[in-house]
Image (cartoon, rainbow, N blue to C red; front, side):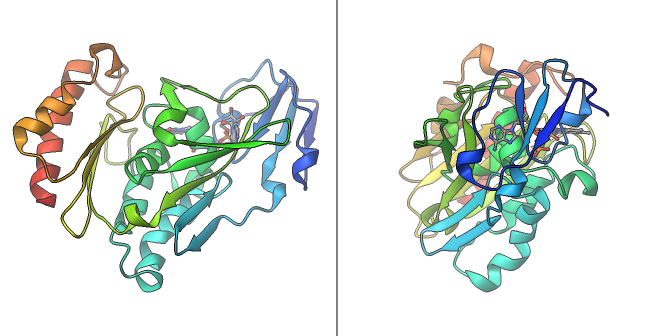
Length: 275
Ligand SMILES: Cc1cc2nc3c(=O)[nH]c(=O)nc-3n(C[C@H](O)[C@H](O)[C@H](O)COP(=O)(O)OP(=O)(O)OC[C@H]3O[C@@H](n4cnc5c(N)ncnc54)[C@H](O)[C@@H]3O)c2cc1C
């Protein structure tokens, strides 16, 4: 839709030209959310896609996804990674998580990793992906400094996160150790390509040590549980019981009680699959 309060669109080409940012400015990435509803308080858009960040940087340490990397580019990693890094068993998870978003192929080609994480919706599938893979975001501050923080600490609740006014999410790093793990994926949504109601992901190190389970979409922020070895059913259930009652998402795709029950069922399936 037209944003008829916007008077200027700026496309900085260098970091120092991003600022100053004021209360009537909004960072524009893919624009799939920004242009999907009225933004009466926004008068200026700062288009960060002109900064020329390489969407995906692969090193022996892992993968850096630029904030401007599109979902289509993320999904493609599931096809390209096996040839480039055959030992990174987590490759299928990239595409799987992209399908955990209510989105047509047009959205996939435009929506970005950074936009998805910054919206911090429970059904943010890039939050699901990066939480279970030990992702850490790098944030640029207006004063020229950066900080890095785990994705699980970045998202604090339903559509809330730790970004301060003027902060720009630059990238998310996924460490190689997590990428080498076998993964399992479960998603429940009202329709095959619908917004996710429950996303439960698992990761188990290929040497058998270390088991990680994440719950997203069902909860207002990501919950990630780490175990030194694969837990038994009781230990897994006990871990999930630590999720507070008010952390289960309440919206159209499902009630909190149902999400809690389904998360437990799917977690057990993942435990069995990765055992
Ligand atoms: C039909 C439809 C279905 C959708 N389904 C889902 C869904 O299932 N799950 C879900 O999570 N979302 C959903 N969305 C919302 C949105 O499209 C996605 O979350 C998408 O990934 C947002 O990315 P974007 O690049 O388009 O963000 P934009 O629209 O460009 O920006 C989104 C917000 O993030 C801010 N922002 C963007 N990048 C940065 C950055 N690098 N640093 C700081 N702030 C930034 C913007 O200022 C804005 O407030 C849906 C949207 C539509 C229209």
